[in-house]
Length: 94
Length: 535
Image (cartoon, rainbow over all chains, first blue to last red; front, side, top):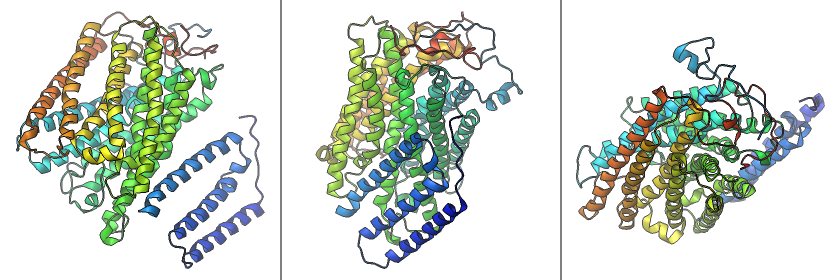
């Protein structure tokens, strides 16, 4: 515990992250008007994943935390992504 | 294994008197050992209730036609039997009882990382159980969907599905919090000198299980909420009549419920891995291989859920992908079996009751595992899907696997938990009767399934009569064995026999402390200098 560093994130960073999340939300809405077929869902999931990553990195301080948490979160996200990909084997080829 | 010396100065966890006395002293205690016993007693209550339901169903099937119940009662009974046995017994299972009791001791800790969260997990378990039970008595009757709550039937039936899935949702939280607690405990509280590769293998099994509980359970939680939302608000998630997809329900349900099989079986395998070296008087063969296989089962187990859906209308590409992945998950399971048997090679086997349970586990688990390959193969699955074959396979794995390991672990650790020994001869007779009854009950179902008898029906064609009689008589023999086992343990627990610390000469940390363990397990945290199975 004594090795942990306290990192204070500047307000500007928080505001930039908030703006980024709003922009990505707008893109999520706009992309539904483009006809991409099954890839509309893929696009929405990629954007949602980007938003999730930004929240994890900045709001939840993963960027400034110990590397072991990076490893754990990365494995979890990889498993989650793989579960979605395997599920889509059904939807894309049914 | 360690350099420390414990004496009997401090009160043990059974004698300890805290702020409250009696039952209040137990249900407000954050001692991991007491919480383990709270789980044990409540789970045994639900297990025995589930056994009675099973016996009633088998009695109904002794002859074609209606015996003691009609179709609707039978549907309600197999649903409640499944809910009780799955969510209230085997999912918490070995981990909630023996994991809670022994994990901190095995890694040289005083308690789990979050003791109050641990107690809250048990409260959630009890609240969830009560809600499931309430679902039987309110509304328009007990749910009749089976424990799987398959849509769209679960959206359309008038029975009380909402309360039952709410109960299962709450039980999921209990499971998540226990998994989280165990993972953090193993990361943070291992004794000095206990590196990851010096941790007892039961700990590794619980570590893999913890990650499955943490990652897979939320999926079914959300799915159950979607069922509730669809029933109450008419949102079209799963009902094709309003734009939903019923196969999506099956995907979401099995994304959790197949890994849940590994939540049940991994701790059971871990307990067997503790028993075998103790009675073989030999270091476990292939420690690292068992560690890797535990984690591989946990990992690959995430990606095999589709084998429950081969006949549901899923795409053919998905079918072969899931079939391939299913065959892959058999490899780490087989590695464990090879390691257990290799441990016995040239060992000095001490034939005692827990060892017999471990060997019986390997036998029935192998039958369950091999019959799983029949179901994992696309061509053969189409023939036996939704027949009694599936019921036989499932019970060989879940009851034969987790159930046998649960009773094996109970006979192994009973002297440590209560400082009493049971009558070995009676325990062995109980096991033999139970083992014969178990095989007589479930093995005929393989034959019945291959002959085409569908599962989940209260009636059947006369051609299935003889095998059903054998199966029902088997259920009576198994129940007799169970009764002998339980009475023997109750007599030992209540008996005033000589207190004993370690009847097995075990080498892991729990056998180095007095029985029953003191409140904080160790007067001085041990320093670990070598691996857990040094014989």
